[in-house]
Length: 199
Image 1 (cartoon, rainbow, N blue to C red):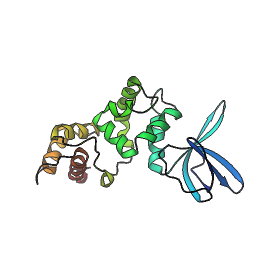
Image 2 (image 1 turned 60 degrees about the vertical axis):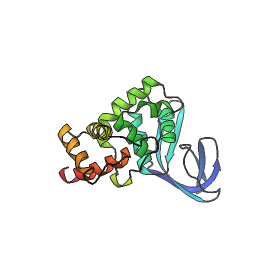
Image 3 (image 1 turned 180 degrees about the vertical axis):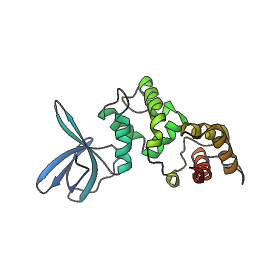
Image 4 (image 1 turned 90 degrees about the vertical axis):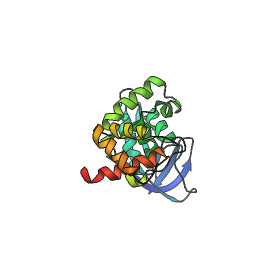
């Protein structure tokens, strides 16, 4: 398995790049939101190699977190590399986790190529696999689409992460002990910190 490819950025195409590694050019499909340097600069992509009857493809990601989410999406029935890459392109890992925790199907339906049934299947299967994803509590950032919410939504999000009703409710109450927190992701972050010692 090739864990990553590091070399010189040789060319940029639509949804892909070519990386020159000692004279060998690797064509790598990447998320559309991947930040890229100018041609001739060094780049590094964490890669997944897909071997199919019609050939071999490399998928590259700017971080291991993105790659991990991509591979988790591939485990969902009916989701191939093209759809998984589209999801990562439109929903960075932290946004994907927030959407899954809240079972917010609308966030996935906005992704090109993802219909409502596929979105529901992704939500259902990722809900069970969410614990397998690296949850960086300190990196959770407020989302502009998830503002002005109450404690019920935060409790539901914690339930989706595998906590019990009692644990979730107590954590949210403790998180709000110094006043109401209007942003959902910030409230979840604070509640998870309250739960951290118990897990």
